[in-house]
Amino acid sequence: QVQVVESGGGLVQAGGSLRLACAASGRMFSADDMGWYRQVPDKQRELVASITRGRSTNYADSVKGRFSISRDNAKNTVYLQMNSLKPEDTAVYYCNIQGISWGAYVSKWGQGTQVTVSS
Image 1 (cartoon, rainbow, N blue to C red):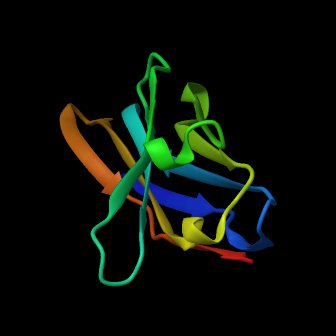
Image 2: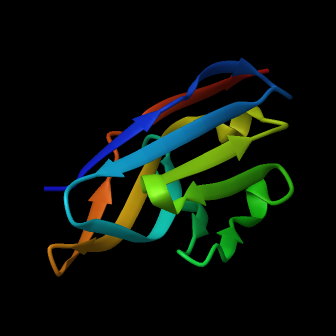
Image 3: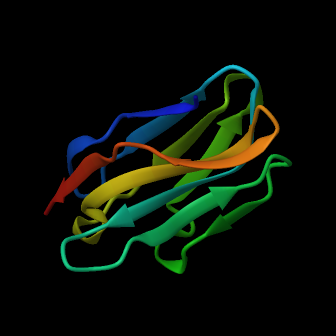
């Protein structure tokens, strides 16, 4: 069974930085696409950034130039470095990791971590 655990997040002042991490564990698991999403109350979850196994990246327009996604394939871990944070970045951030486990495709979500940016 694949487990996904997030870490990082917290409270930061506007202009500050935070780094999120998300690790997938499980025997016979190989991660493929990884991504970070965020959600605020009464709104749909939105894609923040994604990265393929070959390290091709995609970013939401609102975070381009401020956020950076990276991964460590050996550790099945994805990171989100968030710089120049703004109050509108406040949300619960979720990671999503897709891959193959025991020959079957899986898509797993992290538990979510709160990011709060004060003005």
